[in-house]
Image (cartoon, rainbow, N blue to C red; front, side, top):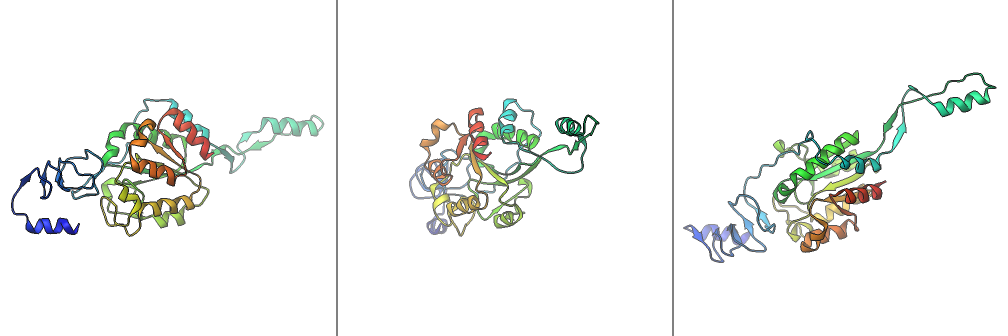
Length: 280
């Protein structure tokens, strides 16, 4: 960043190509539509190589659509593996088995037994990566999000970009209204199951170094925050829309898999089955 400040002070004209100045194409670490494995992206419409260390542009994300009609009905069936029911509240429906047992013990005199309506007692905390490279996976994530909203009544969702840091948010149109991650740790207990959805594709600095976030200066590395939320919600799974066969191509995916202690699963029916089984 200090080098970028010097370039801005020194540079007086537009540059195309080259390896030093702020411009387009070439291998300079500053600019757009070139290639540098540790670049600061400026003035480029979307990512290309998924390797920018910082993005110096205004970025606007959209919420995932929770009303999208599911294209794959079986996603719901896979999610249902996690469902657990608890009977709570006033007695409302007939307990047939209990009525038979009670009537038999009562020498044949009918003894009706009532129980409360079953309620889905599973509590889900859903963290959704949005924007950047996740634009490639919007359809799959929206289908997953829609299915989760219909299957789990006790579901809270929050957005992040690339990696969970010190804050998250509820609405991408008001992304400046941040919620401290530690506040969520106080608000939601250990009985919540944590599901993170993201492609885990980012600069390795985002995980390993303070200040590594592509969008802001973070005092603590992404790895620290991931380990912290895993301690808060130990029943956790990471769902990755990138095909599993491609995970070894990206260093950050391998690093996140290690942090998750192997609990990363592809967004496929088989992957969802594995993830739900691990959370149950």
